[in-house]
Structures are given as structure tokens and as C-alpha cells.
Image (cartoon, rainbow, N blue to C red):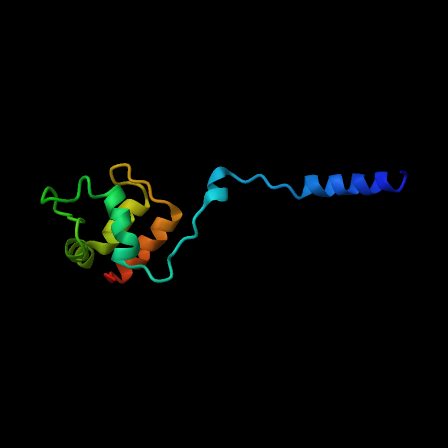
Length: 113
């Protein structure tokens, strides 16, 4: 019994020290796919979820509802588009760190597929 008690004590201490305090976001985080960023794989989802409500249907100079429209705008104003949304200064749009990386890469090379 005397030998078992120190072993249990050490095991208890190790168990406590190895615990991490991770937020729910960290536990459920999806890896950021930013190696090859395409409109169809990442950017369309981003635009559909955060931009299309205002930037589609001819209601705005900046149309982001199709690849052709988005590419035309990015070819002219890509850096401006990125800066406005990456700094969370456009209509309260908040991008995740992953979305910022993806948008920056796509603006630099706006490929479709």
C-alpha cells in the first residue's frame, strides 16, 4: 500500500498538469484550406454567406454573385476589396483568420476552379 500511494500521487499530478484549457472553437476548428484557393471551393461560399445579400442582382457597383462579376471587380479593385473586408470596416462583415488568408490569396490570383 505504501508503494501504491506515491505512484497514485504522481499519476494524479501528471494528469492535472497535462490538462489544457481549450475553447470550444479550438476543439471544433476545421483546418484552413489555403494552399490553392479557388472561387468554386472557398470564395463562393464566403461571398454567399457574407456578401451576396448586398452585392448581387444589379443593386451595387460591386457584384459578387457570380465568378465573372467577382473576377471583374477583383481585376479592378482587388486590393481595395480585400482591405475593406479584412479590416472589418465594411458593413460589419467579420472574416475569420482563415477567410482573410483565403480572400487575400484569391485576390492575388482569382482562379475559378
